[in-house]
Structure formats: structure tokens, C-alpha cells
Image (tube, rainbow, N blue to C red; front, side, top):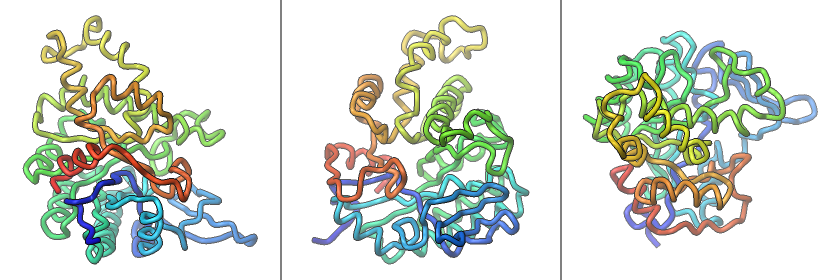
Length: 332
């Protein structure tokens, strides 16, 4: 069978990559990879160290092993995205720019000879919006990438007027923007200290950041200023499904609501314009999400090879509609 994104039945849009070529590209911030004396791996970004996650010799870094695991799981086509540990949204801009260029060059080279199986989206230096727009343009027009991914935690909020230049560039280039959290405090301000216990920064912290992003995009008028912008949020929008009632109530009762959101149904219309991957790890949670937004803006995601991904060997059998949705989102 000849693989192509056009005939793929299963398209996975949530799959992070770690690139050997990007090691040290942010200078003293890293990233850096190594092993302890007992052989346990570590991964360093700035002063943050992740222990016990093996990147070397795993699908994160070995593209051929990734393809083998994709075949075993029945995934036809996969979108590779930046590792959320290496957004570098708070480090000095020159170092972030250098890292993103090096990362995107390496990512493009990884997928270039595997175009029937792998695509990719770019990393952007979000502390310098003009540089982020320039790198997005280069990634799309020169490297052939399909969009970009940013974190939820940056030097400016998602609805800051400075962000409008990036959103406008996405619309001009006709590419989607993916939003996926990173653990708070890696290279920026520290998050809630309680999140440092039990891996709560990723277990529940991501869900909080995702629903904050949904609120900021809608309440802050981003979708009204950029009606043709396609934004896809990870993990089904996090805790959004459980909080949507309060989110809608705020539109009716709080004094800061913009005029565009005051008509009946305006909030719901904007919510349904956002895209979400379905990586929720719970069927009932996914059913709730679908009951709120329908299926037209839902895509399939796995966090492939990550801690919360389906177990190796599990067969992936999402509805074919999700692959069609991914083709629309990614302009395949």
C-alpha cells in the first residue's frame, strides 16, 4: 500500500518529537540529554531536569522506530510537533530564535523523506512576535511544514494585541495554530507549588491551562478579530467540558464581556469554531466534549509514545471522519 495523507484512514495530530540536532541549540538553556550512573536517563532544560523518560532509542528520536510503532498501532499518518519541555518562550529572544530555527530545520529533514507517513508543525520564538511571524513564514514557505505549535504560558497572554500579528500571519499563510501547554516554571515564572507534587503539572495542570486558553481566546475577542483563524487545542480543551456552563454564565453576568459575545448563542458559536484533539483518556469525557462541540472540529490525537498514550500494541481505530477533519484542519 502506498501511504499518503490524502488516503490515510487514521491521522494522529498529537505526537511530539525530540531532535538530536537541537541539543544545545538554546545555549546554556540546553536542551541536554544524558544518563545517571545507574543508567536512568535524564533530560535538562535550563534548571529543570526530567528523570526517567527515555528519549534515545525511542520513537521520540528514532523516526524509523516511530514508523514501526505506527504500523503496529494502525496509524497511517502522524503530525510531529515540538516537545512541550522545549518551548523556550521566556528565555532571551536571540537564543529562542536560534533554537527554533535549528529545531525546525531538523524537524523538516526528519519528515522530508517520509512525506507519506509524517508531517510536522513548527516551534516559534513567542517572546519576539515579529521573529515568530518570520519563522512561521520560513517554516511554511521554505521548509514545507504544515503549521505551528505554541504553549499556553508566554510573556504575553493569547489575547494580547501583540499576538494579532501572528494570528494574521497564520490566516495569510492559510495554516492552523496548535496550542499545547508546557509545565509551568521550566524557563519562566514558577507555577503553583502544589503542582510540583505527583506530576500534577502535567496530570491536571495542563487541563487547567487549556481551559484558560479557551476562555482567553473567546473572552479576549481573538476569534472576532480573526474570523478565519483555525486554532486547535490539545486534550479536548482540558477541563473545558466540565466548566462550560460557568464559562457561558459569565458571558451573561460579568461586566467585562465584549459586545460581540452578548447575543444569545454567541459564546457557543465561537466555542465551536475552535478545534480540539480527542486525547482525553476517558470515553465519558469524550462523549461530553462531542455533546458540546459536535464532531466537525474534532481530530484524533494520542500523545504518541508519551506517558498517557495508548499502550504499545493497542490498535487505533477512530472514526474515519476524524481523518477527514484533520485533512481540513491541516489543508492536506
